[in-house]
Image (cartoon, rainbow, N blue to C red; front, side):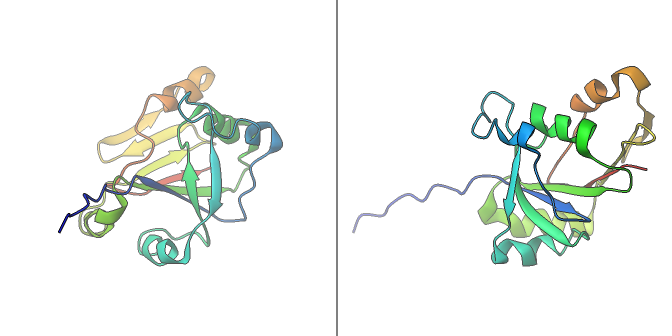
Length: 156
């Protein structure tokens, strides 16, 4: 009997929102340019993953995301994230090992909070005030999404 080697499933990224998430046309035109660091999109999350993501994410609208941290993602944050909006971001590096990733977040969370309105970034090491004129550039060089905790982005 010949055994076929099973390739591990790839990473999955999640985005949760306080309201239905719509990608503006300006951003949607770059779909497929992930390798170039441009594209960003969300799609409805499969029921299987909804139950898993709900263990650690609180927002009512859950999506599978692709391109978190890419140029179009930052364009969305800068131009389209409204005051009062809240986003949650999370990633599982290998889908078939999701139980370990979720357990780590539940037992030893290392959450990140980014406040777009007050230009702050907070992680387990402390709070950083971003420079007003280059806040977006500074954010693009910080850890945005990990398997160790949920990143909450707020605009207040």
